[in-house]
Amino acid sequence: MKYNKQGREVVLVILFSMLVLIFIMGVYAADPTAPDSINVTANETKGTGTGGLKINISGGYIATMNISATIQNPRWKAFVGWVSGSFTLDDSGGSTIYDWSLATITGRVYATRNSTSVAWSSINCSNITYLETENSNMDHTSNDDNITKTFENRTHNSFWVGSTFILANTCPTVKTYVNGVVQFADFHETALYDGYNHVYATILEDNATGYDGAGYDFQLLVPENGAPNFTSSTSYYLYVEIGT
Image 1 (cartoon, rainbow, N blue to C red):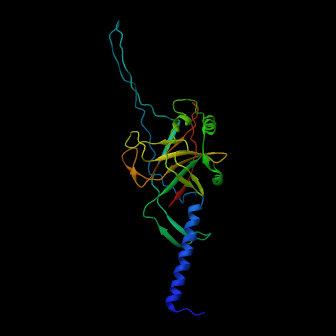
Image 2: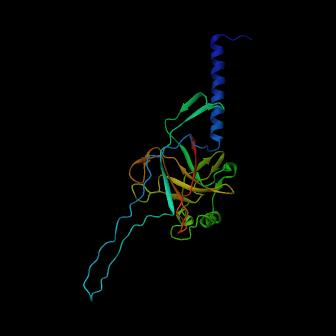
């Protein structure tokens, strides 16, 4: 059978379209992956100040007062920032035959204390049992700010983790602040569990107003070891999904 030039072009277009479709379907079902690089542009904390606030009353008097204090919480820490990237078709050496730039970044950022691979095929919502186990593992003994208390909300958008679909409003959730105040529209973060380890997932925004008024793609709150005598820091391993 012979094809004229126009017929060959049509066949090539169809074949290329099928390849793109197969690639995109594969990407949508792919597991989260480690980012290519992380560039920390700032790492800051609130100052503790020096000395106390002076009060001076005369002997024989009783001072009645209200004292207000904002105390930095060493049992928690956060990652905020931006995600950039594209879909690529690479070989094992990292050489790219083509890439698809993304006009708008969508997806998730994940953080876990697990230094080995996450069991993404087993990922699902955490629950009170797993949260309490993590409280014990991280020495979060205070009912005021432990992991269970922090992730007590269950209102979040639906999302995919690799090929696993997470229904809306099913996972323990926290919503970090915007402009320093409580909000519920953006930066949905959920607590997940892969059967062995906790994974914290935040849904990406597109340069949304964040905790300090600046624009961010994600805000991710994670627990630190809460033992009073703990003086080190806990490593977290980040994964990312984009375009889904």
